[in-house]
Length: 118
Image (cartoon, rainbow, N blue to C red):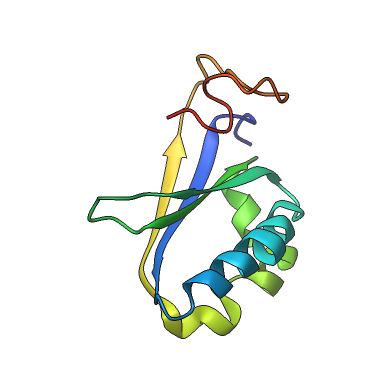
């Protein structure tokens, strides 16, 4: 098993602009919380990447191990549901051996990092 905090799984997608608002609402309120509730997931967060040739929307999940993606709970909710046909540029990236150096702004301090830092 990989140590918690050292393994991240990222999913990137573009979404048809005709359903973009509905997709974002579904992902933020339904899908992301359901994924993070699955065994082996530590946390999840979404990002929007602008001005690049990569997918625009990314979800980054901290996981306990690669086996986390093979649970029945995750299999039951995998995919993009009613938005499947609206998805393009679907990418999956494993980020390993990430070691946190410093985190600011956690706990509502409103400082740099945390929720708004880059």
